[in-house]
Image (cartoon, rainbow over all chains, first blue to last red; front, side):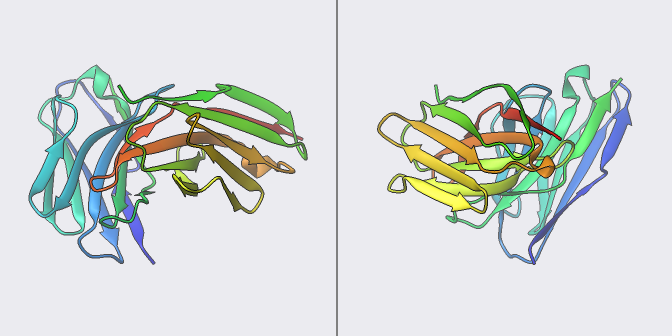
Amino acid sequence: SQTIHQWPATLVQPVGSPLSLECTVEGTSNPNLYWYRQAAGRGLQLLFYSVGIGQISSEVPQNLSASRPQDRQFILSSKKLLLSDSGFYLCARSLSGSGEQFFGPGTRLTVL
Amino acid sequence: KNQVEQSPQSLIILEGKNCTLQCNYTVSPFSNLRWYKQDTGRGPVSLTIMTFSENTKSNGRYTATLDADTKQSSLHITASQLSDSASYICVVSDDFGNEKLTFGTGTRLTIIP
């Protein structure tokens, strides 16, 4: 089966601290990978997507960055968190051209 | 600007009743429309996906319709169950190759016994 893991499930961080969220995918090769943020009462916002190792496209300029060191690993990072970075972060995958995205369980980030 | 609007924002119905959720979009060019169910604190799960040529698609008690001319879609839930309580999100794709999606803000459905 094709599974998406996200770690950690919840995170509370102080303003100005660094961030690293991890997404790993099982059961598929060369997937397209995505990072989304879902703020309360708002739709999902695409942050980054990747079509392959080392290939990252940024959709929204901000203090976050993404990396794809391995085919099935997608990492979301920040050097200094802002209060506005609080939200629910979702990793998703799709097979190239399939028209379907599958989401991971999400990480709830609270910045204090 | 591509937009997806959903109504109502929230809905409360009795267990066993039917309901219909609405989605209007202004995404162009249109590729496909999906409905997702998102339980609180969980990732969205796909219910249906429809392309331009499809008018209706069912998944158990969920039936989605699409009118590409008026750019409207609906999700009908039949004989609601307590487990149907969730947010239902309408998502439209405007770029099949890169899968750039436009998300609605969702309808929060609550089923009461």
